[in-house]
Image (cartoon, rainbow, N blue to C red):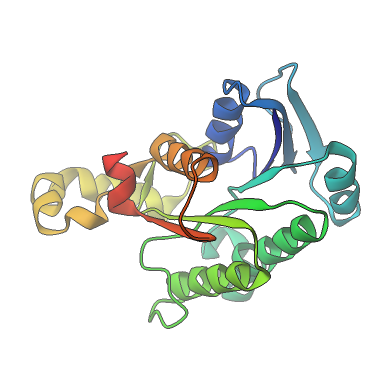
Length: 217
């Protein structure tokens, strides 16, 4: 029986991840690290405040086996490209490093379709840098999922995503044929791919699950 930690537990994917782990008999405890209060309560669920002072104590007190990182923001919400990078790359890698130092062997993270250190777009370039930072840490098992536009009801409004979703609905029949690998994907499918990826025996230490593979799953 295992204990999992979810980072970014109150967001769209994070909240789904929490629910799936709570319903999974392989997990006896689910630790949710978040800045906001959770919308659910459960005997297996423990919430801890997300701050620097809590990090080491959380890992040591709860004997965590796996970490599911659902952290992510937008440049608009962060306020600048620098602030966005501080969250989506620096914070993620720092948290992962802390987890590894505390003995956690398995780490799963949500990246993005097209992530690459050499990407032309700033967003995908930061995601690529984040991936490389995690790979360099040397987890026994690292699972990276690369979704396209994420579908599902968000508590917060993301204007850019909302516009993209509306546009996609109009062009979906054509877009799905011309760009099948770029189809938007439901948040639940992403979380399922993360959990399955961590719990399956993988041939390599680093597993990258692309958007099209999550649609198949």
